[in-house]
Image 1 (tube, one colour):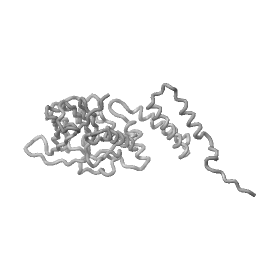
Image 2 (image 1 turned 90 degrees about the horizontal axis):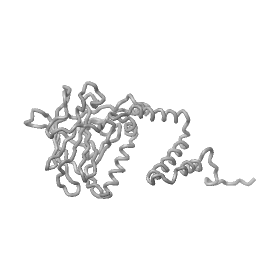
Image 3 (image 1 turned 135 degrees about the horizontal axis):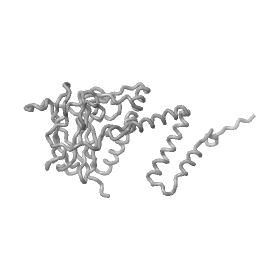
Image 4 (image 1 turned 60 degrees about the horizontal axis):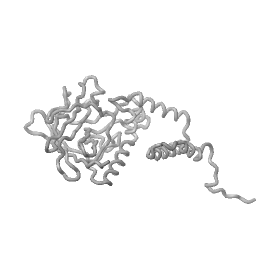
Amino acid sequence: MTTQTVTSNEQKEEGLGQAFTQHVIDSFGPKTNPRLRVVMSSFVRHIHDFAREVDLTMDEWLLAVDMINKAGQMSNDRRNEGQLVCDVIGLESLVDDITHRAAAKNGSSGTLSAILGPFWRPDTPIRPNGTTISFDPPKDAIPVFLYGKITSAETGKPIPNASVEIWQASTNGLYEQQDDKQQEHNLRGKFVTDAEGRYSFYCIKPTPYPVPTDGPAGQLLELLDRHVFRPAHLHFMVIADGYKRVVTQIFDSDSDYLGNDSVFAVKDSLTVTFTPRKGDPQAELELEFDMSLATAEKA
């Protein structure tokens, strides 16, 4: 008896194979945006191959759909649960890294970026330099004076009139929109740099906190047997005319969870050390944090 060898190319796919996937991609119309076509073609290929690789069941698919639906239902202008789901699987940190490296290839990239996170608000008030963002602080809060300069990554010259936005959680681990006991816009503010590019404000020393466990992101962490904590950090967003926006975080070098942040956002160059402040009754510690912005590409 003669045995016939069948090559992998000759093997027939079971069920809906690559021809089906290509049929879905071919359904995109001629008016589809070119970049959208590239992204969605790749997305369809990868998600179809993923489903085949793990033999995804209908029950598992429905569970994922339900998680997506719940993330959307929980999200509003004060909390982005869908973004938090992306954070706990490292997707936002990955996209942030891809974006920053692409910018670096095109010239100076400025201060290293970090993820936006789910608790940024678009309506943060402008506050005068040298004032506080901390109102009715808890007894365990350590007051900090934070200051720095915003400069051009290319020239090193100061950038006046830059918007420096800051937000952080309180010592109970909650941002003000999560906590009825905190007043509106507590621990957040925008500061405009002066003619020398300087900004300054009072805040509190950040502390580690758990990501919310009342939604799909927290439930996913539990299912994956992972802890929910983030290291102590503060968020920044810096915007100036003619420059690329910088969204970043700074991390306290004394904090736990620097090596296993639940959203994978820690970068060594963004780790800082708070030092004692003398002669200021409003603050026990201080931190100087300078940032640089790359010039925006011309349209």
